[in-house]
Image (cartoon, rainbow, N blue to C red; front, side):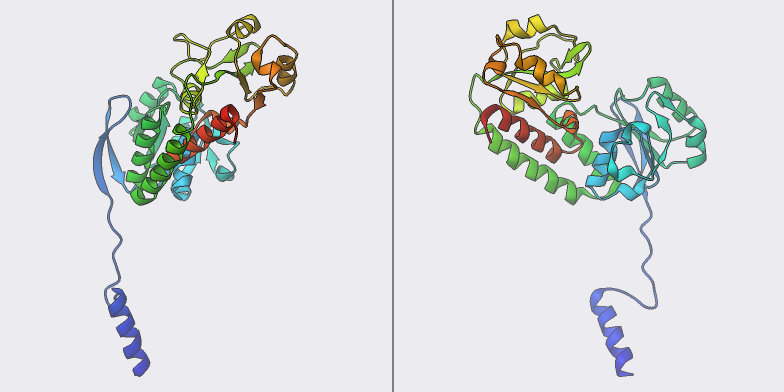
Amino acid sequence: MQTLKFILLVCFLSGCSLLCPEKSVSPVMQEITDATGVKVKISIPSKKIVSLSCGISEGLYALEKGDDIIAVTDDCSHLPQVKGKESVGNKKNISMEKMIRLSPELVLSMDGDVPEQTITNLRDMGICVFVLKKGVVLEEIEENFRFLSTITKTQGAAELNIDEAAKRMDAVAKRIKYPGPKVFWEIGANPLTTVGRGTYLDTIIRLAGGENIVSGKTKFPYYTVSAVVKNNPDVIILSNVPEEESLRWKQIELISASQNNRIYSVESRLMNASTPLAMAEAVEKVSNLLYGA
């Protein structure tokens, strides 16, 4: 009898009930406007999510909501977190048959990642689709991350991520000198491809304290070796290109980056970020290349 009284007392103090089990909270519907201007009614919290963008998948895992993802695209296959998740095809060729079979509660994509017709087809089938912003600048990445936290009810974790990112970005900003080192970032070898204004990597260069030698409206322009020599970058960064590219630039002694041995290869994951903290880490790494660790 004493044992039973003790159990009842503990339950009372902890707010639980033996007679009336706690009911699960029913999801609520909220209308939110997506990046395409469409008003979408979303169930909060959302479950059974299909992620059509790697950044979205990484963002949900950062919020410890990866279990809510029921499928991804082939383009996410390099992410160790999604191993074992079903694929609905690649971003350019989504399987409508799989979508119907999976019956997702919510499909998430980033603006421009999936053809507009695919989004239209999914919506015509009655599937809830929300398109997030591309996430080129920090403000967009923060907005996307807050959206993911809202639909999964993890706002606290998101704000901790954002606050930590802000502290680290402020620390980088304090060490920047103007004018900063001139930077050429190669992302493709054949043809030679770089990053222009209005891209995520251009944002990283700027926040890290560098100056992109590439101007113009083309986001991923083809470039020439002679143009690189003419603009004479202080630093050359290589990502997602063959290792021999580094040797090629080192042999061109007319370039300041070659003369001072400032040619660096970086991991391809720096080419995009899914969370503010991931972006802050990318800015830190690039700033270390520009100014020293």
